[in-house]
Length: 435
Image 1 (cartoon, rainbow, N blue to C red):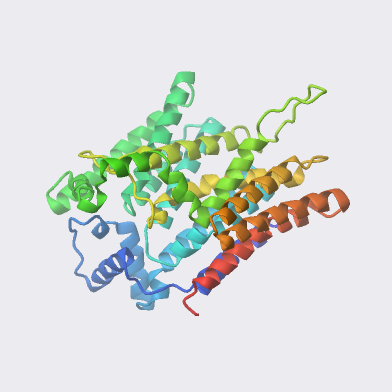
Image 2: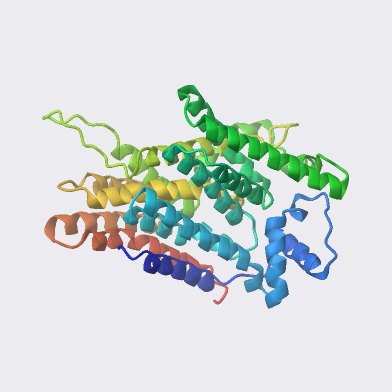
C-alpha cells in the first residue's frame, strides 16, 4: 500500500464508477435553478438577483463553462460537482498520507469515495459537495500552519481564498468560523501561533471588504449578500414553532443523522473510537497507549467534528428569529461533517486492525454495529439492520484472521472495509437512473 498514484487512481475510479452507476438525473429542484443560471451565463444574459441561488458563482460559472464546452445534459451539468468530489478524495488522501499514514489516508478517502451522500450529491448540481471541499481546505491550511508552527503569509492567503471560494458556492461555509475562533482563543491563551492568526484575520477581513466592494460596484448595495441571505431566511418555511424548536434543539438532529446511511455508518465508527479510548486500568496497572499518527491530528479533527456538530445543532440562520439549519430532506446541508468523521473512522479501523495481541478495537466495532442492527430490527427496518450486520461480520472476520492466520494486515483491512463498498454498490444500483 505504498504506491500513492495507484491508490489515488483506484479511489477516483471507484467513485466515478458509482457516479456512473447512479447516473446523473436531469435537474428538477434547486439544481434546476443553478442550471438555468448557468445557461443564462452561457447566453450572456446573466445578472445578479436577490435570490442567494442566483449569486453562488462558484457553482454557476464552472457549470456554465462545461455547458459551453460539452453541451447541456445531466452529465455535464453535474460534472463540476463530480470534479470537486474527486478533488476532495485526492486532497484528503495526500493530506493524511503526509500527516498520518498511508493506511489511514486510504481508509478515510475510501470511506468518502463510497459514501452514499458523496455519491448522490456529486451526481447533482447542489453546492454542498463544493462547500465541503473548500471548508476542508481551509481547515487543512489552518492545521498545517499550527502543527508546523509557521506563519507564512501564503498559507493565510490560501486559507482565505479557499474560504471565499466556498462562500461563493454557499454561505453555509460560515459554519466553520466558530471552530476557527475556538482555535484562535486556544492559541491566544497559550500565546502561540499569534503571527499566523494575525495574518489570517487580516487577509480574511480584507477579502470580505473586497467582496463587498465588488457587490457594491455591481449592485449599488454594499450589504447585498447580507440582505439577500436574511430575506431568504425570513421566508415562512424557515420559521419554526416553539414545539418544533424544542425538538430541533434537543433530540431531532441525532435522529436525523441516524436515518441516513452516509452519516450513521461513520457515526458508529466515531462511537467505537470514543469507547476504544476509554482508559481501563489493568491488573498490572499498565494502560494501552493509542498510537496517534501525528501530534494532535485525531484530537484536532475530533474537536472540529464536535464543534461543527454543535454549530449545526444550535446555530440560528437569521438575525431576526430562531431558524436552525433544516434537517429531514436536507441531508446535503450537513455534509461538512463527513470529512472529520471519515478521518476519525479511518483511525479507529486502522488502529483496530494493526494493534498487536489484542482484539479490543475490532470487538468494540463488532459490538457497536451489532447493537445498532438489533435496534433497527426492533424498528422493523430489516435492510438497514443487514447493512450494519455486514460491518459486524467484517470485524469478526478481522479478529479471526488476525488470530488464526498470518495474513498481511492490509488484506485484513480490505476485508473490514468490504461492507463499505458493498453497501455503496447496493445503494447506487437501487437508485440508479439506468434501471
